Image (cartoon, rainbow, N blue to C red; front, side, top):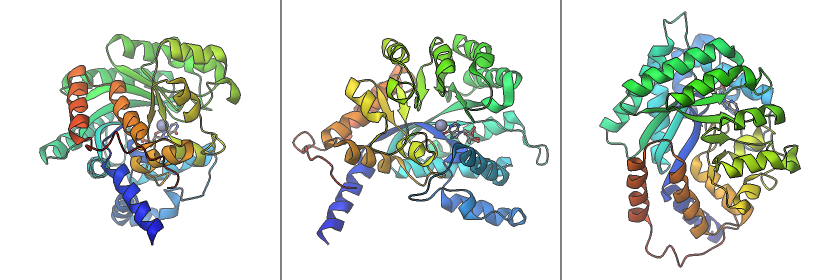
Length: 358
Ligand code: IMP
Ligand code: ZN
């Protein structure tokens, strides 16, 4: 009884903690409730729930994770689907206490349904605007994603599309993401597209995978790094990679459950969050794919706190410092900083409990 009261109190703290989410793939963030609605729309696909999510205690190879995205893509193939998925995802993040969200997604063309890449991005922008008009307490921006599997030419087309929307979306499209199966293709082939994106003012967030490629891509340099699982020496990276990241002060987007379930790190306690946090390097807790990995941002903060013994004050500071790493302009940062001040409980600084259980 006492334990459950304690647990609930902690749950409320993490839910109410204002949060910034910087690494969320749209189709990986679809909740089970929304998947249910999509399955009802498309019964002929014979897709079951177990095919779209990786539950508690389960692990998958990276390859299996990418199969899951293929299944979800089958379910989300019209503008109507994208509108529903994007509005649901935004509202779920808002309900979880996220005040600023950068969603990312790979524009897809679906010949069967007439979906175009332009229509894809327009629909996500429409969803963002709808949520705003409905008064959701969350500022949402969009990063256009390059799936590395699609090669050089598509990467360049995607940058041009992102550029167009950066100029026409009233500041909603702020950057570019490089993601997809890290075992496919090589970063050097994508450099011209990424360089162009940077030159035209798009911010860059790159999933960094293996050694040689990371070294090359770090020279751009990107504005943020997704995961960075192979950067530090203990995991096959190198001191020179770490030095580059530190010298350029490139924030890391760290997704604990995604890395554990996708087996790119062996366990929560061995997650590289600790390495970077100890260095005092800007590290932002994120979800990656909250639907696929059955998590939310509150849980990820709670897991980081219980695994690495962070006090509530430290957790608050961690969420506040994430504001420095957003891609929206300084005016937005100022508004968010004020929001954090307004929401901070009076007794916050005295309440220095170390989280010991989740
Ligand atoms: P979408 O871009 O909204 O369709 O979201 C799903 C896509 O995000 C996948 O097909 C991958 O390209 C990318 N993605 C999601 N999670 C990861 C990850 O952990 N590593 C690399 N790519 C990812
Ligand atoms: Zn990711």
